[in-house]
Image (tube, rainbow, N blue to C red; front, side):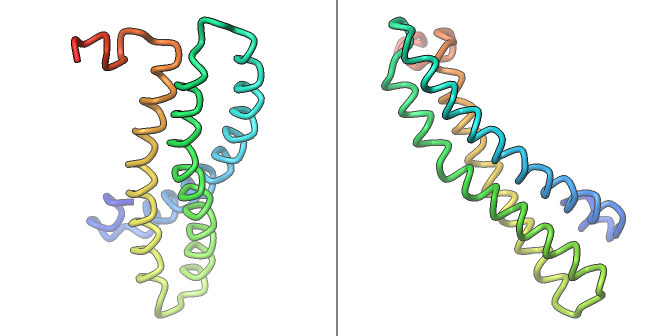
Length: 127
């Protein structure tokens, strides 16, 4: 989206909006599969329940933001197609939500990786 805005490329912006909608849909699928994975991992004593909870807590704002991103992207796309005056502002708002979502995705991915990957945990780095 940033490239589309900088280059003032409408096709690139619209492609980004479609990808944001897809991100919102995949966030839903990740949330559903994450709940199932949590229940499955409870049977493994070597997996820390604390780490699962930490990941779940990190995923909550990410999931909500990504749902919002998908919804705002769909609305932005439709408004842009209708050539409404406020479409540009809505696209900027959608981009801001996308940036926030990206920030929280990093935290969610980090905490999820720590569940099974000892090498990325803080205690393995001497902290």
